[in-house]
Length: 150
Image (tube, rainbow, N blue to C red):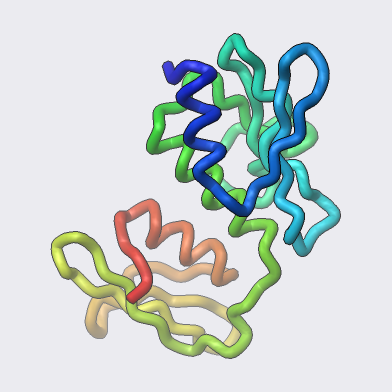
């Protein structure tokens, strides 16, 4: 389990988040460029190591009724991923003009993300690897699989 200080260092490495100190030594972090009404990405990070990250727009996380996931036992990689994806989920879609986008992993394998009608498909050469309803879902999948945009 990461300490409070380690979690704080990781969260503060996301320059797009603004720190807001609250009561009892807890800290919130806001994403002021959110395209949704939701701006609170990190909620009540506590000196005991407990805290929450907004994952209400993400899949694969067990969230409470406010869309928050508890990060008490998160590893550094898991915390970085949920923060990056939370920020991405609150960012206005900029994918309207994207039709085809290559992604690469550390082994130089290239997958291509293609918008076809109203779906996002991931291809390995000419083989379909996955289909998603939104760009954000497809990008999250590629990121989790170790790929980055070229």
